[in-house]
Length: 264
Image (tube, rainbow, N blue to C red; front, side):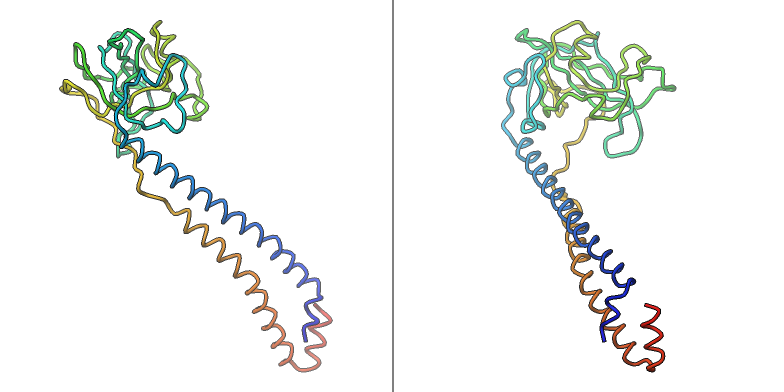
């Protein structure tokens, strides 16, 4: 009754199924690992955002690379803004929206004289044309204490952008302490501070960036389960298909069954 399983057609069907099963299992684990990474990232963000604020310069130093476990940690810095070396970072999206504008990055010269901390003061709209510096609200004058989130230096490679040069004065594509230290000719501590609040409070200012979300785990676990369910359906489908063909062969007239067998 099941001699048709020895046909070339069924050999191809089984071969395709044998390839699909491990492929789907692997895709399921790929989505599962993405789920785990998302959960770990959420835990890190929640833990660091809720951490006790520490002084930026107690962690950082010139040339320091922010470890993954320290990103989003709450940090503070006290000093005076160096508006002479304020820059804008082009091609940045409005917080919670889709409008492209600029981040405003202003060095804060630390009161203890150890160097400067780059402070991302927020987002502003673009100017009339891409070659013009947008209007930027001035930061507070005098000594201020800023609180925000510790971020790692951006690089052209990490953002997938090219450094072709030719930008107007004070306009850059990435927030990078080495680049800004060379531009300002000063000592800049590694990493930067994403502003959340300032004392004394600023007047009109760039639009502050929101805290990163850390509650949504995404669809990756659901996708993993779907891939594994599809994997289980393949052998079930083979059995159902084989039994249906066997019933059809058994119900067919003898001549037709012989013809089917001859053509399989």
